[in-house]
Image (tube, rainbow, N blue to C red; front, side, top):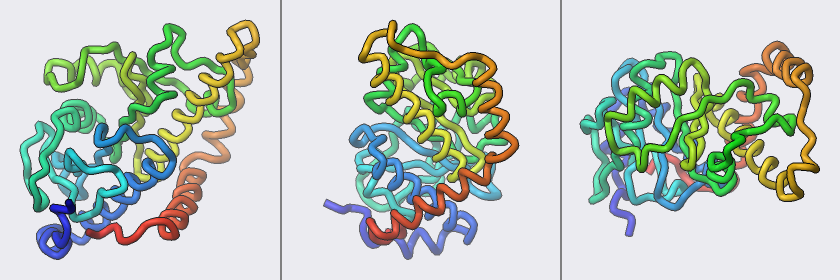
Length: 259
């Protein structure tokens, strides 16, 4: 059943050009997360701030797979989950989308996009007492990662302050026994952050399968020099170049992102 089919024209005429562009970008990000194997069936969310509407965000309809998300079937809600614009069909929104994401968007005005995942490797590392270890270049590139203790499924607004305090000014957070979270200044930046964090977690799971005695951790000087290179020589340019390559692959693999 595709209850949202044909909604593109109706939604397109109710939003600004800037919002429609953001909807297309966000739909592409959902497809990319699907394409690179970072989904959990119909669970999880990616949110993006609506241009010129700082207290409104876009997020997916609950019940759709990530490769079904389009510009037309995204919800627009405020930071407390009140629906501003709904797509057609009998889908709804999952409270965790605005409890977690709305909390961060409310205080981190530098953050445009937030990605939350429940991948096998991400939850695996989130369930380790040691957390993410500096045992790969991918981990070194990430810089500082925040941690948030498990509260049960995130549907309680009381958890918001703890989420905000634990994330601080970082763009990456491991939700203990739960999953991963990455923030970004743009769709490209958010994708680069979640992809690097996910890859670092996959590497750690593989490396630790041979036992901790065989794990070789990077020295502090190596971490600092790696992060310096990323800040000065790569930065956001690397994320943008990577995202353009991802978009080319998406265009070869999927159909329209509009509806």
